[in-house]
Image 1: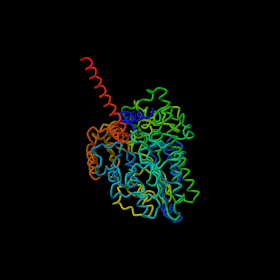
Image 2: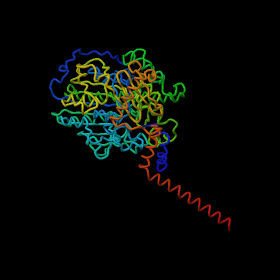
Image 3: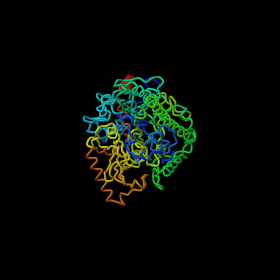
Image 4: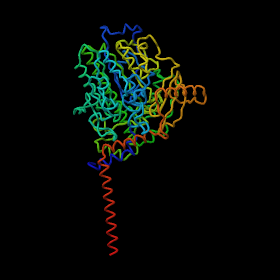
Length: 606
């Protein structure tokens, strides 16, 4: 399909496939028993460097050290050198999480309450919903520049590219970034009809990717170039936003083929196996129940042999993409060791949200046409290399999120509960921490470790330094409520309890209460059994919503329908001339039919 036919096919997608695109080793690790912060400090006394590594759509148990199937020795090594966190929470969606990580603020206070793909018309332009950093919002990169740091970023930005919206406008000295929810990992092209192309920028200007581009390799290479090009007498802050493992799931075959047989038993077997490992490792209590899959998900046995082969292959590619990311992180670590900078570098590794459930091809002939027109193939013959359009779908996303319920975009544990690891100077090596930690804690922690003042009034998050040095075993009191909200999906934690609401298509909009300490799978709703606690947390949530300017969702809001509406609007802007041509063709056709009808009437009359 080429030319105008291809463009028309793209325009038709908004009502079909485009709507579905838009969250091991044992835990007991050995290490020094000392909790003396001085013992873990840099020997030189210099301000530490920081490397923040952010994966995209990585589930809690995707890493080897957390019990996952993928081989991740370099990330595992960082966990063994420092601390891994077993109760770390982020927002359920990419841009809000990134805004929170970079500012230490609730996503609504940053201006990035949700993403442009799913925002309803009623919210556009409202305070907190501009989808860009609003006036007065200060990033950690800006704060660190004030501390004498050089600041670099590579990878996914997705926080705007209008005037004043790129990384250089928010404290980064150098940057090579993607301002989209995702893109191809091998070429400079879009992964969904919402985007006309893949908008990459270097230092504020549109950029072209090299011919030998692969996302994880390139992002590390460019970051190494930035670090090496800076002044040796200045510490650095390096923020890398990987595309792994966002749709399209892609990786070199040498990483993916080793997982050819790993997922052939299907998603139910994988979900159960991870749940069992989570109990054995102490991620959840022994005997903690596992939630049933959300309504509408298929049984593995209902798939044809061909479909089973396709999804098992996509999961193999997913694992390979995780291993490829780890491999390139290892290259950065090796480079910092070779240049004498490793011992004075603090590493933070985490994910922006849980696993991606989208199945773009579900019942969509038109999405099939779009992928073919754009050089993509959805086939069990592909191993993740150029042209592969890989996705794990809602069933494997639910399995990957085990032992949590649901997945990305939803505020059940599968969407919010992800891995987080910190290692480096100032971090006393110790076993896994079960302290509740948040994405908004990272900015004040980094600032405090850099010698800045992590004033509590400047952040919604809290510094983890007392926890990291062994001076404390908690970050916040159990009676302090912690809220999250993105596009109507909301949660509030308070001590052992969690209040949660999820909207369509996988939720029903009802508030539920869970004892998350004994029921992390969110299987037993306590709202009726403990109405006093339910009212207490509802009051806490309403206070959170008022304080942060959370807007009510329009009646009947459904994120998949909204993606379709927003995609159609976006594509109409991209291809208005196609629409105009179609409209003109229709008008000319009608005019021709009218003239023909009149001529025939005149002929009969004569």
